[in-house]
Image (cartoon, rainbow, N blue to C red):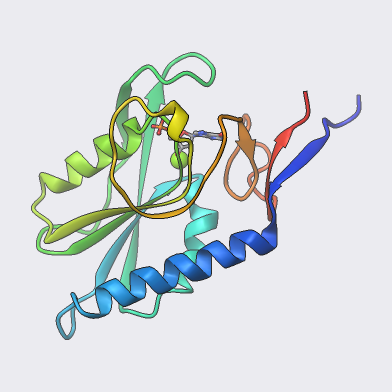
Length: 179
Ligand code: IMP
Ligand code: MG
């Protein structure tokens, strides 16, 4: 059986450009917000955002630490049920910290809405969302993405952290499967 053909959608070069721009924006904004000795807390959503976040944080020049969270939303296939639950919570207390939540793509918006509400309840100084990609046409709940790489069409994307049944995360570009 032959492998399905992958159509390139966001090139590796474009991804590097987006990371550089996002890193600059974040560094510029937080250089003035962080007190001496203070660190930005970057909360990375497992597993998909790990690939993007690893490149992004290397473009950030203000002091930061990283932590990870894993959530799962339930539903059949690619349709979210609207229920989100924690599989792994963060380990660093967000209380009194400037927090950025990093996800690789915003689809319905439910994951990020749930996560920001959870972290907000812990009393951070601020919370902002950074996402590499966003599918505005799929939004079901409103989320304020302060730092966005780029908007994408309503296609099921793979690569650079995005998976289809756990496959394709290690591609260095984003594409979709030819149907
Ligand atoms: P949301 O809660 O519906 O916004 O879903 C967000 C999560 O669904 C993302 O963090 C991804 O893990 C996953 N997801 C959304 N769109 C895609 C896609 O096109 N390909 C692969 N995963 C996706
Ligand atoms: Mg994700």
